[in-house]
Image (cartoon, rainbow, N blue to C red):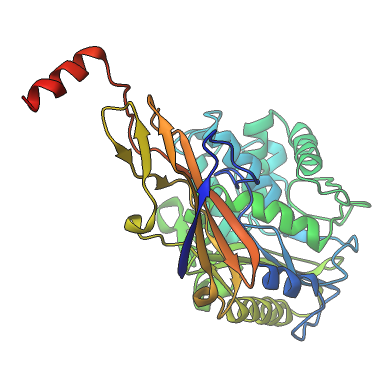
Length: 392
């Protein structure tokens, strides 16, 4: 990266927006331009598909992404999201044992054949839900969170609204759709809830498991997501299959800090959904990269401190966030500093002293604050006397 610097207003005001640590991850202009073309770049055999960059939420390619379709067990992404939130909020703990209800035991489809009154820990139920897509385990977790299956489904729909999933309606927590009329969502909405779930690292403990067991080895679990066994960087996330929905998947993977979400809905064959997800992920990793800015501390200009116990202070770059770039752009980034030339003490630790700008092809890519690493106190009268005597 090339470096240059400019002076900074003495009043400390930054003359342009600074991206805060809580803001979105910056995307280069050319990457944005490429992302604005969301047409499919690979062949997929399904009704709907979408590839999203997870950290920014940018859609890289899509086909019929807003068509409302049955999602089958991909529904469980929302169920898992609410369970993960409940764990982090202390509502549930992984070692808590839950007795199976009659309603949970009556669920059809994929299941671990819970018997009424049988106890399993939240950890075991999460494993059964994530790895084996067990409908009975998922229902039992929902009951533990909300008190009843019906109340949990209400929570799911409320959460969907909060996430901006405007075309989604859930009728159950499992994705079973034999009697469902309007249990539908879209590829885009699924990407939104997948993105939300990925913020909870605990889910990856389960979603990356290929084989495991329950009941002391008596119940074998094999992940329904075949990509877990073979795809480099896979992090999950969930498959689903019913007659109404066809074969579906939200496949997530991360390589070198770049995290992608590939959603496939309505494939006729299971292999088609995996092939489509793999093709989209491959394309994304081949064309984009995540770059964390690197700054040589010695290149940052010093700030002269007037009436301070220290004569100068060197700002530090605070809260640098990764940048999403089209591949090959990293070496083209230039760095500029805008730093206060002088400032009167006292200076507080963490006080903003300027900013660092990252420039690509003449356009501002990102900007982050430069802050005081330490506090600089104002000189007192006794300090002047002491300094005076050191020169006598």
